[in-house]
Image (cartoon, rainbow, N blue to C red; front, side, top):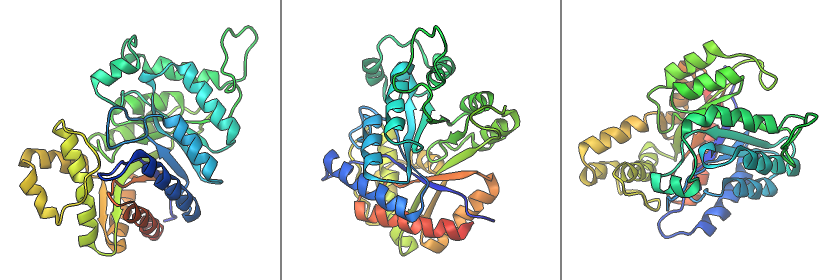
Amino acid sequence: MNAIPLSILDLAPVAEGSTPAHTFARMVELARRAGALGYRRFWLAEHHNMPGIASAATAVLIGHVAQATSTIRVGAGGIMLPNHAPLQVAEQFGTLATLFPGRIDLGLGRAPGTDQAAARALRRYYASADEFPADVVELLGYFQPVQPGQPVQAVPGAGVDVEAWILGSSLFGAQLAAALGLPYAFASHFAPAMLEQALALYRAQFKPSLRRSRPHAMLAMNVVVADTDEQAQRLFTTQQQAFANLRSGRPGLVPPPLASASELGQRYAPPVLAGVDEALSCSAVGSVATVRARIRAFIERHQPDELILTANVHDASARLRSFELAMEAAQAAG
């Protein structure tokens, strides 16, 4: 089995005791190291009104990271299109792709990436996410060469090479990606329930397009690697706490790890932890050997074309080391 491409989804974590400025500095450090290690993509996700995630101005950060790197592709995983006018997104990413040709990805999602109050503040007059397919088609149209008599064009944007993806965690995104002939990224790192159904549907219904001749699926995993299983499991308690807090309506800064994973049961009710375990079931946590085996099993089961890894680790140095060890594990996994 040949090694498949590996990428990083950076959630721009703001840890307790840190600041967004520190987050951005470590983001650049991670992106540079990722490029040197051979990661293919470095994606940032749009979230709003969340103290522990600093990637709200996603296109701005993509430009910042692209300017600081030279080879790794940089993009959005993704832009939440209900928050934006398609023309504005086309202009932003047309500009990015003009500045950094051949390196910009545009993943598109239909969720607001925030709560209802912030969603209203972002786009007060938006009807509903049901308009997402039409918005995607409109947006992709702005990247086509300008036609005679075309009343509105993206400048820059028209004729610019931007690799577009559909993101999803349900059958809806899989159907849309298949119908439009686009690559598909599934959010299995936090919503794995419909992974197998969505993949099967996407592959069965895919229609070749000018952008993609065959289906291409990238799956997300939580991967935390350390020298020992125990150390990695302790680091992973940060992500488990953050998810439990979010599910309990208490989003905040990224918490430090607990002394041991057993303390989770003392802090959260069993139904909350059960929900966290289910949501984070697509995870590989442990030493290089442990993670290698889990990544191999995941690849053999789902046959992805690419993997994108994320790690919500409190200490930035430990997070960087985790991605270094993750690449070692994944290359050996095949």
